[in-house]
Length: 285
Image 1 (cartoon, rainbow, N blue to C red):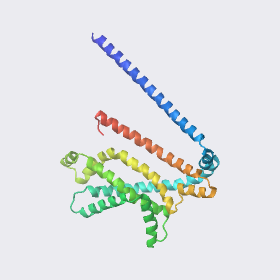
Image 2: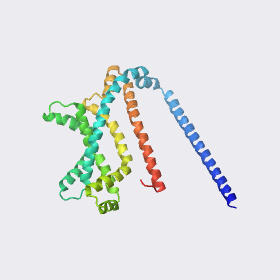
Image 3: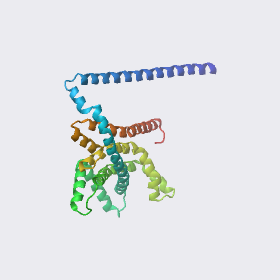
Image 4: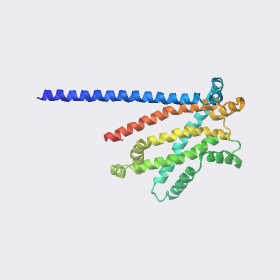
């Protein structure tokens, strides 16, 4: 009796698995077909537009693409160097601001007020305005002499993005349940050890997708340092456009920035899906 029941259950489960497999195959085929149809419609619409040949020559010229690629790629290396320094600076300043925001010590009250004002003001100023204020204001003081525009741009990016990162970190720290802190203190951990060993690790796991989104956004905004005269990928593309009167170098810069961002976007999507599956199954986040 038990054997027949087991066989019956196994047969039902096999049928369910076969049904799910067919549904997955059908879903993937539908996605591929709908994507191909969409691409075909867009291609048909563009190719039949009256001005498409002129746009194709101005923005998608293979000749100018090949000419611009080495110079724009060389400029992208400056973007990468600025990005690495900016990430480190934003991590340090953003963490310090977040810790000042959440502290309840009376001694830290002045720093708490300063941190709150800083995050409020910096989040309200457009990134481009911050670049102008730092890039043209600091040299205007005449204190430091001539400063590389890339350095000024890096400082502006750190000042702007640290305010956003600080608020994300603050939200993550405060989202950890107070019982975690109480449990850590009951085990004999100091306040600093509780923050470093208990609060911060849990908070970072929860806010990792938000931090990754800010990082991806910062990757793109690093290109704004060209407004200060730094010869990065965007500025190199502008120089090529001024020489050739063709806009294909801008497409080259766009392609390079996309290639730089896609791995982190995929990583962010994968980690977000992983966290979502853990939460749905009731596992530890």
